[in-house]
Amino acid sequence: MRSMGLTLLLTFTTLMLLKTHGFTDETDRQALLEFKSQVSKDKRVVLSSWNHSFPLCNWKGVTCSRKNKRVSHLELGRLHLGGVISPSIGNLSFLVSLDLYENFFSGTIPQEVGKLFRLEYLDMGINFLRGPIPIGLYNCSRLLNLRLDSNHLGGGVPSELGSLKKLVQLNLYGNNMRGKIPASLGNLTSLQQLALSHNNLDGEIPSDVAKLTQIWSLQLVANKFSGAFPPAIYNLSSVKLLGIGYNHFSGRLRPDFGILLPNLLSFNMGGNYFTGSIPTTLSNISTLERLGMNENNLTGSIPIFGNVPNLQLLLLHTNSLGSDSSRDFEFLSSLTNCTQLETLGIGQNRLGGDLPISIANLSAKLTTLDLGGTLISGSIPHDIGNLINLQKLILDQNMLIGPLPTSLGKLLNLRYLSLFSNRLSGEIPTFIGNFTMLETLDLSNNSFEGIVPATLGNCSHLLELWIGDNKLNGTIPLEIMKIQSLLHLDMSRNSLFGSLPQDIGLLQNLGTLSVGNNKLSGKLPQTLGNCLTMENLYLQGNSFYGDIPDLKGLVGVKEVDLSNNNLSGSIPEYLANFSKLEYLNLSFNNFEGKGISTKAMPCASTTSGEEAFLSFKESCDWS
Ligand SMILES: *[C@@H]1O[C@H](CO)[C@@H](O)[C@H](O)[C@H]1NC(C)=O
Ligand SMILES: *[C@@H]1O[C@H](CO)[C@@H](O)[C@H](O)[C@H]1NC(C)=O
Ligand SMILES: *[C@@H]1O[C@H](CO)[C@@H](O)[C@H](O)[C@H]1NC(C)=O
Ligand SMILES: *[C@@H]1O[C@H](CO)[C@@H](O)[C@H](O)[C@H]1NC(C)=O
Ligand SMILES: *[C@@H]1O[C@H](CO)[C@@H](O)[C@H](O)[C@H]1NC(C)=O
Ligand SMILES: *[C@@H]1O[C@H](CO)[C@@H](O)[C@H](O)[C@H]1NC(C)=O
Ligand SMILES: *[C@@H]1O[C@H](CO)[C@@H](O)[C@H](O)[C@H]1NC(C)=O
Ligand SMILES: *[C@@H]1O[C@H](CO)[C@@H](O)[C@H](O)[C@H]1NC(C)=O
Ligand SMILES: *[C@@H]1O[C@H](CO)[C@@H](O)[C@H](O)[C@H]1NC(C)=O
Ligand SMILES: *[C@@H]1O[C@H](CO)[C@@H](O)[C@H](O)[C@H]1NC(C)=O
Ligand SMILES: *[C@@H]1O[C@H](CO)[C@@H](O)[C@H](O)[C@H]1NC(C)=O
Ligand SMILES: *[C@@H]1O[C@H](CO)[C@@H](O)[C@H](O)[C@H]1NC(C)=O
Image (tube, rainbow, N blue to C red; front, top):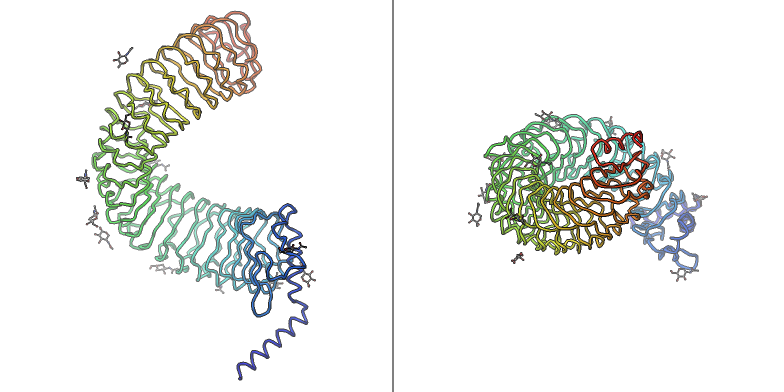
C-alpha cells in the first residue's frame, strides 16, 4: 500500500510539473512537425504518416513510452532524409533514443539536444553535419552511446566529454577534429569502444587512457598522433581491437607486448615510423586474427606464428625485415598451421633465399599473397597451384628464374598476377587463358620467349596487360583485340613482327597502347582513330610505313611517339589543336611539308633526325 501511495503521489507530482511547464504529448507532436518542416521537401514524403489525422505514437520511426504516451524513441536511420536537424528536437523531453544514422542532414547539431537529459542513445553517424560538438550535449549525462562518426564535425575533442561518465561507446570516426585527446577522457571508465580514427588529432596519447579498463575496441587510425607506442595502452589488457595505424608513432615495441595484450583479435599499426624487431611474444596472442605492421621500419626476422590458429590477415610488407639470407623464410612453414589465413603481405622487405616449397601448404583459403620487391631467388614452387583461391599473386621485383609452373593454371580465381622484373623464362603458357577473371597481368621485364598466346583473348575482364621487355616474337594475336575492357596494353621492347591488327579499333577503352621497339611493319590501321579514349600512343622503333591514319578523334591524347619508323606523307594539322598533348615525337620518319606547332610543345618537325626532335621541344627557331 505504501508503495502504491508513493507511486500515486509521484505520478501526481509529475503531472503537476508537466502542467506547469506545459509539456505534453502535444509538445512532442509540435516538435516533430517542426522537425519535419526542416527536412528537405523531396524527402518529406517519407514522413507522410506524420500528420494530424494519424496518432502520434504510430508515426513512422516514433515509439512512445507506454506510461505517459510521450515520445521515447525516434528512429529515422537510413531514410536518406536531407535538410537540417530542427532545434525543436530538444522539446522531446522524454526521448531516450535518437537515431538519425545514415541520412543527409547538414548544418550543425542543435544545442537544444542538451535538453534531452533522459537520452541514452544518440546516433547521428554518416551525415553532413558541421561545426563543433555542442556544449549543451554534455548535459546528457545518461548517455551510453554517442555516435557522431562520418560527418564534418570540427574543433577539438572537448574535455567536457569526460563528464559523460556512463558512456560505453564514443564514436567520432571520420570527422575533422583537431588538437589533442583530453586527459578527461580517462574519466569515462565504463567506455568499451572508443573510435577517433580518421581525424586530424595530434600529440601523444594521454596516460589517463590507462584508466579505460573496460575497453575492448580502441581505434586511433589515420591521425597525426606521435610519440612512442602509447605506454597507457600496455595497461589495457582487455583490448581486443586496436588500431593505431597511419600516424606518426615511432620507437620500438616492448618485448613483452604479447604478454601485456593477450586478448587482441586485431592489431593495426601500419604506416608509422616504428623501428626495432617484431616482438616474438606477438605469437603468444593465440586469439590474433588480423595483424598489420606494414609500412614501418621494422628489422630482424619474422616470428613463428604456428600457435595462432585463427590468423586471417598478416601484413608485414614495406619494412626492412630479413637479412637477405636463406633463413629468412623459416617462419613460413609455421604459417601452414594458420588454416584461416586469407591475406599474406610480406613484400618490400629484405627477405632472401629461395621460396620454400611449404608455401604450397599454406591455407587453401589464401586469396592474397604478396612477396613483391624482396630478394627472393630460385624458381616459383611447383605446387603453388594448390592455393586455389588466390585472387592476387604478387612476386614481382625479385630474382626468380625458370618457367612458370604448370600448376599455376589451376588458379582460376586470379584477378591480379604481377611477376614483373624477375628473370623468368620459357614461353608464356597457354593456360594464362584459364584466368578468365584476370584484371591485371604484368609479366614485363623478364626473359619470356616464343609467341604471345592467343588464349589471352579468354581473359575477357583484363584491364591491364603488360608483357613488354621480354624476348617475345611472333605476331600480335588478333584475339587480344576482343578484350574490350583493356585500358592499358604494353608489348614494347620485344621482337614482335607483322602488322598492328586492323581490329585495334575495337579496343574502345584503351588509354595506352605501347608496342614500341619491336619489329612491327605494315601500314597503321585506319581504325586506330576509333580508340577515342587514347592518351598514350607509343609506336616508335618499328617499321611502320605509309600515312598517319586519321586520328582527329583522339582529342585526349597526351603523348604520341611515332619516331623511328618509315612513315610518310604530311603531318596532320589537327595535332596542333590537341590541347592535352605534352609530348610528340615524329623524328626519324619520311614526313614532308610543313611542321606544326602545338600548344604544349612549340614545334614539330618534318625533318628526320635527332636535332629536329630536340629543336621542337625547345622552340620554333628552326622553321
Ligand atoms: C496520414 O498518415 C496516414 C498513415 O500513413 C495516411 O494513411 C494518411 O493518408 C495521412 N493523411 C494525410 C492527410 O496525409
Ligand atoms: C519548445 O516548446 C515550447 C513550448 O511548447 C515552445 O514555446 C518552443 O517554441 C519549442 N521550441 C522549439 C525549438 O520548437
Ligand atoms: C546544461 O546545463 C547547464 C547547467 O545545469 C544549464 O545552464 C544549461 O542551460 C544546460 N544546457 C542545455 C542546452 O540544456
Ligand atoms: C576528470 O578528469 C580530469 C583529468 O584527468 C580530472 O582532473 C578530473 O578530476 C576528473 N573529474 C572527475 C569528476 O573525475
Ligand atoms: C599501468 O600499469 C603499470 C604496470 O602494471 C602500473 O605501474 C601503472 O600504474 C599503470 N598505470 C595506470 C594509469 O593505471
Ligand atoms: C610464449 O610462447 C612461447 C613459444 O610458444 C613459449 O615458450 C612461452 O612460454 C610463451 N610465453 C608465455 C608468457 O606464455
Ligand atoms: C629505416 O631503417 C634503416 C636502417 O635501420 C635506415 O637506414 C633508414 O633511414 C630508415 N628509414 C626510415 C624511413 O626511417
Ligand atoms: C602447429 O600446431 C600444432 C598443433 O596445434 C602444434 O603442436 C605445433 O607446435 C604448431 N607448429 C608450430 C610451428 O608452431
Ligand atoms: C605439405 O603437406 C603435405 C600433406 O599434409 C605433406 O605431406 C608435405 O610434407 C607438406 N610439405 C611441406 C613442404 O611442408
Ligand atoms: C628489370 O628487372 C631487373 C631485375 O631482373 C632490374 O634490375 C631492372 O631494374 C628492371 N628494369 C626495369 C626497367 O624495371
Ligand atoms: C588450364 O588450361 C590448360 C591449357 O589451356 C588446360 O589443359 C587445363 O585443363 C586448365 N586447367 C583448369 C584447372 O581448368
Ligand atoms: C621465336 O623465338 C623462339 C624462341 O626464342 C625461336 O625458337 C623461334 O625461332 C623464333 N621465331 C622466329 C620466327 O623468329
